[in-house]
Length: 247
Length: 326
Ligand SMILES: Cc1cc2nc3c(=O)[nH]c(=O)nc-3n(C[C@H](O)[C@H](O)[C@H](O)COP(=O)(O)OP(=O)(O)OC[C@H]3O[C@@H](n4cnc5c(N)ncnc54)[C@H](O)[C@@H]3O)c2cc1C
Ligand SMILES: Nc1ncnc2c1ncn2[C@@H]1O[C@H](COP(=O)(O)O)[C@@H](O)[C@H]1O
Figure (cartoon, rainbow over the protein chains, first blue to last red):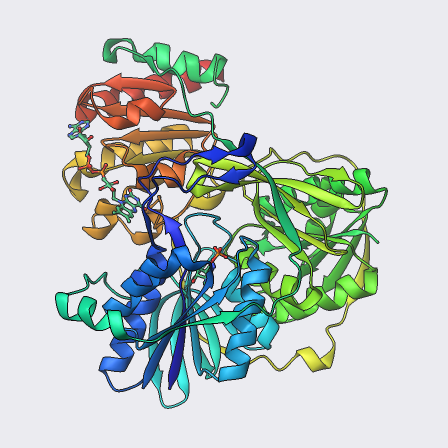
């Protein structure tokens, strides 16, 4: 089994977000970038576990982005992926990214494509389902466990109001959520090995994007917190009713 | 040309998030000079009526045993419906079905998708400008959709539901036989027993607690407060990880992102990963015994005090308020 893991490069959650050009562009200056947590902890680590259990032969990372993502991709290689592909194109548009991934996957043949449940940057939860749609493969979203036996996968997934267990034959696309695996820290050997693992850069093949970002605005945040004494709780109830109008 | 809405039935009712989507689609239909068609599976007369009241003028009614739970079939059905209706805009809720289905449909129809809209779109020429949350709530972005067909999924609880006295016509929808053979087999479904309370993603009122509660045996004060308000309970991640509370209650970056009207956070420090799931709430109340707790910086109302004394007092005050109202 060959596994393709789609990883995105995102600002660490704790970084302060800033925009430039009057809100037209995200400003990466001074931002720490990481592999999107769901892609790393869940999709990639589960793929590594499948390889360690001799259920997968090869794990390839794919990323759609420019050269400034290479350090993030190397971290994925340090964790244990065999090789990586970077599609040299910029595009926060999910359908564009999905088309790049689908085109590459079609040309190179994978049995299993794993993505994270969503990026913590654009929060679309879209790319995985789009890749499946473009390749006409089944898609299982929000997977919390994944077992493979022969050509059959068994996946539990979160659904509204609970969870369900589904079975689906390979090949398919799965988006991975919490529960799938545990976070790993790359060790020295992995980091050394990653330096010489292949990171191939390929040219973009996708069509023009169907959405563009016009402007960004920082969320205003809450400026004042009204403090209420615990001896005056009726005041809180009163404010929730008359001022906030939520009860 | 009508705006198409995927409508879901849940526990015998039209899902609140679906009614919000129909209301939202009505606004788009007004902008683009068309009407709203709702797609629904296995609905009855009372549910048709509610869909009509929310503003749909036509209902495509499917009767299919597996359609509602099979994401591939839902996508195939909507693709078929969109083509038959000549639809240019499709609306989903940004819930677990919307997250699974809208992207597939977007790929099939080459339709630009904005996933997680928080406001009504505006029309600019033939494009739609849609506001959505980005960077886990730290910012919003205006996206322009420039494709011929456009898909928007709306974050639940972004708007209150308005029902009028309009009626919809109902047409039967028969799924093409080519779409029937799904490749996914559902082996087992495990429902969460949320009792009588509203499921967390749809809840307007939420009472949430964190590690400050010390242990699962203390959750009775949280449940009593939630019951008094009519709220759903939630928790921070460590609380779910420690198995004090079930995982489906966990909110934050790794858990659910919610935007209720009222979020009461008790004994939760307010870490950025927690805020990522709740900072869209309309009003936030924080109860914490540490006046330096970061959550106060992201709250509208705060009480510095011990949860074990403050929460029962608040429950009593709410009960008193409710009985005075009646
Ligand atoms: C990548 C990543 C993702 C994460 N995702 C999430 C997520 O999705 N959701 C999430 O919640 N966390 C998440 N976390 C964890 C997050 O960083 C915090 O560790 C967590 O939110 C803390 O939970 P807490 O506030 O319940 O506990 P604590 O941080 O231990 O805070 C307990 C609070 O209770 C107060 N307290 C104690 N006793 C009392 C009392 N008697 N009365 C009143 N107050 C009291 C304390 O003052 C303190 O503020 C994530 C972390 C990482 C690194
Ligand atoms: N630029 C990208 N390159 C590779 N994979 C990506 C990229 N963007 C998103 N993905 C994958 O798609 C998933 C969902 O992303 P999104 O639809 O942006 O929320 C992520 O968790 C990644 O696995």
